[in-house]
Length: 491
Image 1 (cartoon, rainbow, N blue to C red):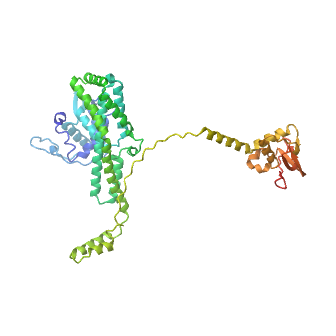
Image 2: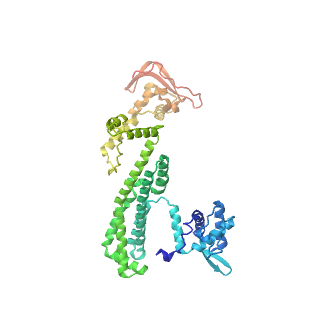
Image 3: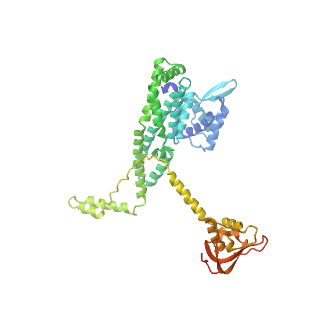
């Protein structure tokens, strides 16, 4: 297993007293060896050493503890027994130890020395860096990756059937992430229970739970538009595939051809991948329920800590200690336990805090479009048209006046025509243009009214005070329309 793939002394630098130094240097070397623009994996030795020296200078490495293999012995009398004094000494010591333990491998090409990293060692370093830089993961991305891979395999079993294997691998990673999240919540709960510092509990909740363990779209899991809305579609496709002999045989042939397997091995691997994905996504509800239970207890612990953080009285701990000491010094028969508890209100129905209720998922509600009766729509349109006919504006009033005046400069009240309801409403506002306010701004200075002392009849419909309406010249001074001095005319 591992002993045939990795050097025996690989983890010695990371387990000794200088492990922090080697960790810092390996992270800097990872940027050099894992560069996306790196074409040739053979890196010159001078470049590797200069990278190590830059890390020593940048991170201010000035402490060193002699490792056991650095002490002079009978088998190794030339071992270095002195602490490095300069950055060059640190660089030489770190480089030699990384080469001797198997992290780096030297290769001589003509007159130049190149440094490379073995594939197994490179994979170990990438894994360690991923663990160090653990980031939040997305449930929705994992589900969509599995769904798209399965759809591609079913759409073209003979050409892209191997994507089923990728879907099974992604589902396994997703299952492992759920397990890691559950165990991470358990460790946090244990650490919070062992801590007596409220500030550390609250700080650890946000630093470790919210930033490190909690997935980025965890909140969407409590909604109906959650990432698992494709799970039923995915399970339906895979269960249909189990009984679709044509596509299943095509996938087996593709596995056999690409992976160079026997027919029985390819068939077993296809069935294994299908069953694995189905098993993972069928049990996801139970696993999420367990995660939610741990999360509920963790949040309850933190909420209780925050609730009672500022409710302590100065000297309360010493008072309680003296009280407990006094009770312990007395005999059991001398202590009126019930009266003591009642007097100090340590235990009573009011002091027992009820646990918060769990949030229940909202029920499904089908939203249907309401169909409005056409007769109701027609009635609304009639009301709208009726309202528009009754409303008056400066433009309507000006059109009515100009239609009545024509080319004449003035017109008597009895000469006005009233043919429609709109004409009746417009005529009622001719004598009171000023009452329109902002609606009649376009009429300002265009017309002038002269009232008569008597009353007159208009179109056998209206009886009002007589008046004459005069159109003002375009260049004349703007005048304010004269209103009826006696108020509303009798109509």
